[in-house]
Length: 463
Image (tube, rainbow, N blue to C red; front, side, top):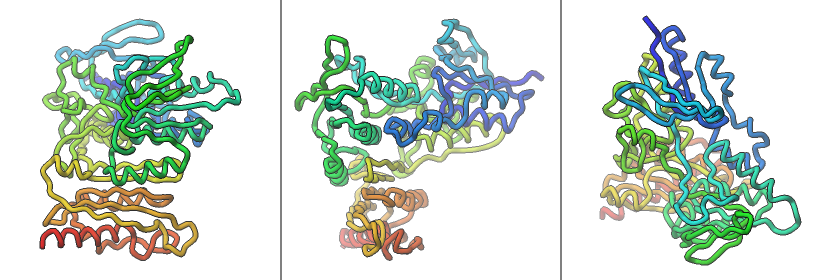
């Protein structure tokens, strides 16, 4: 029998986890693998790009887990700088464009993996395509930004960076620009930075960013980008004023790259991502799988799908897809919405639902917020840490946790993520046997202190 052909669209985390996993289970005599990647790089950490831009990561290649040559050594026919421009589901084939030669051709498939990722949100506003305006999602994007910074030269005048958006990408790129010696302004259309947090926790982030020398302007919606005679950005106009800029970084977020799939009639969800079953198979299509930033995933706490662009999920999707394509078995049950970030020495973490998320799905809840330190208060280096906890009214089921603090704070959110996944109540959490020593925690870990206070809130609300 002739080998089946697996076609993979996208050479990022999901696609290049799926292909090698399928290859481990089936050799080239049973499964031919052809993969298309439109960029110059494959199998890299997109989450590490801000730290490469900042200089914390010295070399671009440090972010690359596997090169195209390494994939090819595993009998994967990886075609770089080649973009899939059309998907013929009924005919089981894809049309590819070789970006170097301009040649187009069709490739048949028996099985297909769509791992097209996400693209930076770029509002349709005047000047958004000007020189010096950069989204940062791929290594190619990061290289373009660094080239743009180099083009500014090194004269003695202050260099000004404007970051549009104050989510994870925005605050990380604000730090990167600050470390590169820029005067940094963050324009945020929301009430506080980090809209993934409740506003009261976002306020702590805002105050810390001000203390670091980053100017954050809330309630500022960008209206246009102004340019000079050379076509390069000079200012960013908002409904709250105009801000000078030598470079603009878009940190508004990303959206699923699903135009190809949409045009082929594949199902997408309310957030624009492809819809899959637990095996990461595209709904209604037996031989098509999808994973990574182009899909929506089930929120196990809220009970509906969400779009979450994180490398952790993409790699897990790829492993599940590769196992299923290769004749094994795997599922991806969903997420609880865990994410961590930092701006300089301030760590930011969340998991589960915010207050508005709980309201949106019809849950009644109580909250509790505590102030503590990430180490024993008497131990050198103890710094402030704030924990906010949300629990369901009456049942006390944990719904969400948010943490803002200094070194050693953010990863505590993993305790809450496990508790959410297990469906624990805040009262059950108070008895968790967490590690203790003064260099790592007070005798009552801040997460447990927050759980105790939330238990009291649950009991008080029920009385």
